[in-house]
Image (cartoon, rainbow, N blue to C red; front, side, top):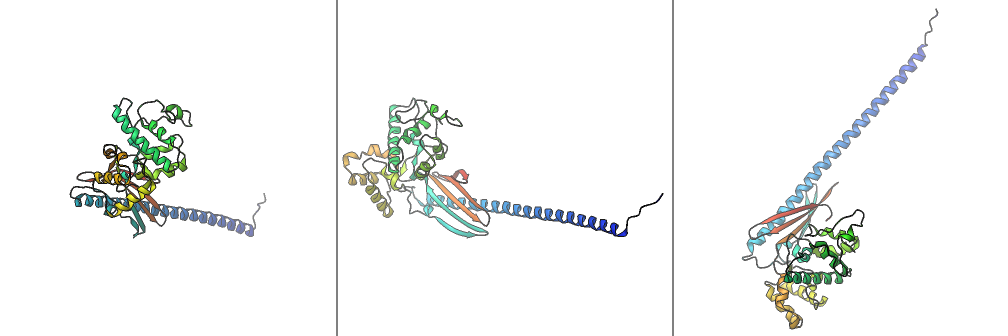
Length: 328
């Protein structure tokens, strides 16, 4: 039987094609390995940068806590807190290894505490009256910001322990069970003022306007008249105007109020004395604070990290009560 032999040129061609395929496959594998290696290197670098930036935020927190402790120790009787104290000094963008750190400490008692609106269904008449006064303050804040005053009653219904809808602008479970997804009112203290986004008549725009002036603290708190802004300060009394609030702020920059009695006396000088009753104003205000918030932003080459720390200044120490990352 005759044997068919391939020509040498054909064999060489097959060998060449095989070699090219092998080289191509090896090249693809090498490129894939290099790409994966680069991704792993980048991923590792990002993890290291994230860890580094987080420790920078904790360092900023320790710095703020130290300033508040110093404030506690420097004040003989912790008489008052004002914006001319060291804790209120903003840390501008400060270079650190690999990036920069920026931080600012805010007095949370400069804001209206939404949890002041909370009232038990079976509360004593006096307690309900106190809640009504707080509701009026909140309504004046909303009016000053040109937001619907209906938000005030809806917020109080969100907090109070009953399921009775306040007339005419309240909102209880029945209002929210028809939402998608459905949910119920809290019937208790807010954990965060961000809960406002769940309440009737509050959209993102109105929330953004209101948020800088309110807070949700774990206990009911008075407003510090040494740190409150114009909107919050003038909400204390219906008779207070923008001009009155601006004047009080200008005066406290030079001479902070060291006791609530001096603030009330100044109100009597600005307004009709008969309309300023100390027994009504006194429970609403303070000249010192215990709750503070530190916002730290760390910017590095590929990472930006934000930490919001809430601190409580007691009679002997300052403790961190919460930490939140991201937008808050």
